[in-house]
Length: 205
Picture 1 (cartoon, rainbow, N blue to C red):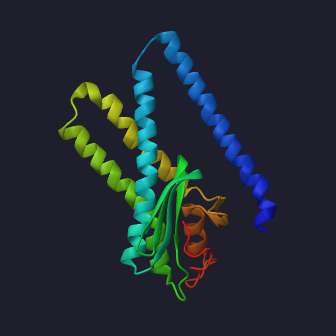
Picture 2 (cartoon, rainbow, N blue to C red):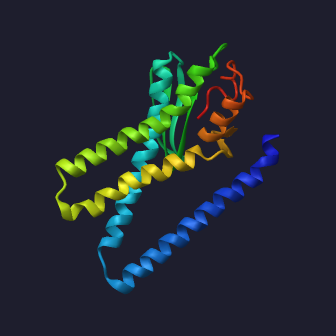
């Protein structure tokens, strides 16, 4: 079943990659034609915001899993080849080449109630909300007015990442076909995902 969806997943990834490359090309052309240094600075802060947002999102899932006493097997930040990895206790941490996604996998649990699953799924969004609050506080207290244009994209990217994660769609994470946060929340609300479904796939998000 999962193998049948691999071409569609690969195509979706290529479409996103091509769209991002086209957007970057247009922005670089605008920068070259206008000679405005703010464009690359905003792009750089947006890239930093995306990487930080993915890390906070996945660590939000991990923190909720730990608070729910669900042992975490793997926390992976990014996609593609593994650049760095380590093990802390029973949890493996991975940093991959392209910081545009991530996932958390817990060890299989015999019973997971619906409330625990809901908190785990919302943990990622809560991680992004915390980052938005932190960036807003730093922007107001530390960054002078001219620098606001470069700090604001970091918070904006978090809103984007939250929206993308709450859109229901299927994807493949860690070689396992799974739903986005939004799809899993929708299935949980409809009762399609039972409380004992930590095995689908091992509390993966």
